[in-house]
Structure formats: C-alpha cells, structure tokens
Length: 315
Image 1 (cartoon, rainbow, N blue to C red):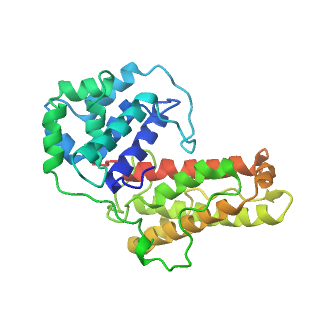
Image 2: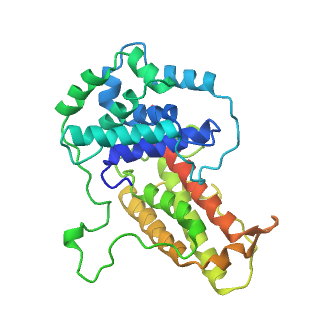
C-alpha cells in the first residue's frame, strides 16, 4: 500500500499510529495523521499561521478525545474512514500534479479535501487552504521514494530472487511483521546518539543498545520455541541494567546496522513460524505463562514505543 510513499510520509504515518495509541484511540484518525505530519513536514510547519503549532493542535485533540483505552503499540490499529479518504485524496493529488511519489504535502492536501473534522478545520484556520497549498506542493523539491535501506532495487536483484514480501505461515503474525519491517526502514542513523530520552533515563545510544539486547534475547527464545513443545526461561528479558556500560562508547555507526540486521533476520524468522506454534506456553522467570503470540506482540510493541521515543523531538 505504501510503496509510493516517501520516507517522510511513512514516518508521518508511523507517528500517526504512535499518536493514536498514546491517546488511547482504537483507530488512527485524521487528527493523529496531522500530528504525525507536523512532526515530519517542515514545509507544513513553515506555512502555519501563528500561533498554530503542533502543541496547540495536540491540546485540541486531547480536549476532544473521549476514549482512554490502553492500546498496545504493536496492535495494527485500523484507519478510520475519514483517514482512508484522506489517503485516497492524497494519491489523487499526486496523480493530479503528475508526481510519481506520495509525500507529506500530498497527505496534507488529502486532509484539506475533507469537509469536516478537527484536522481539516485546524489547517484551514491556520491559513492552509487547498488551492494555495497545492501550489506549495507543486513547487516543493521532488522527494521520490527509494528502496528501503539495505535492500536492492528491483532491477538490481538477481533473476532468481523472490519477488515481493514472503507471506507468513501464521497470518496472525502479519501485523507484527509489518510493524517490525516499518521500524527498520526508518532513518535513525542521522540522530544525535547522545541526547537523552524524555521518558527513559537513557541516551538514544543506550536505548538502541537495549533494543539490540532485546532482539538477541528474543532470537534465542524463538529458537527454543520452534524446537520445543513449551518454553521455560529462568531469566527475564534484559532491562536497562548494564546498558550504559556496554553501549555508551560503542560506535553509533556500527550499532544502527547491527540493530537493523538483527530485526531483519527476526522478521524473516517470524514468517516461518507455523500457526500451531503461536499457542505454546512461554514461562519467563516467575511470570505467568504467556503464549508465543503474546510474547512476539509484546516485543514488537516495546520496539515501536522505544523507537518512537528516539525519533521524538528532544530539544
């Protein structure tokens, strides 16, 4: 679905899902999409009429939010009908402008096509209107999507290489695999590794080191789950203990591809897990047993939450 989307547009949708879970919504709405866009689209922020900011809009969304469900970030939240229409309009705008990609500007135009809704109203009240902003998007530099990092373009692949993503043997894992693959395609190498997160006592470098530890631990768990009728592990997943000492001085330019490689392999492993294996019991430390499916979903949710914190604006 998102093959034509640029990296910034994909990141905006990733943040939209993250915002929806933060607000306890059962679906991704246009409000969450606009919050994601205001994180990523500098052009949009430059054209907003003061005092309109992402914080002022966040307060409006919070005031209109009634649901306060506890939503795991690994859950594949559905798009609301207005959000689906906005994405459809975005694709139409890309075609109208004779552009082969769909970027953040097209998503903004998609929101402006909606006749009602908090996001559309906020944009219009902030000086962003359809005809005017179409000219802005037309004049913006081309931002064509390239192949995901570490993957060959189609024309560069050997003729024997399989085409398209491999369908998982267990359909229930499709959502978790999709989230994991979207995370490893995000650009994080350019981030300042020494900045501290807002909700964790770690730098980005220590946080990514923690994710490396989590990935290695789950590789071992999955190996046992695929070969044993049940899994009992005495130790719990690694927490922040020792992260600072192990990863504080490890080169960031080596840590990022290590995390990507571990999770790319893990995503592949998830595609070959049989359906019947998802129900096996996994006892971790003194906790009550959980099914393998729940363990996998919890891991992906932890990755999505921490990567979201790493990508958030910290200054």
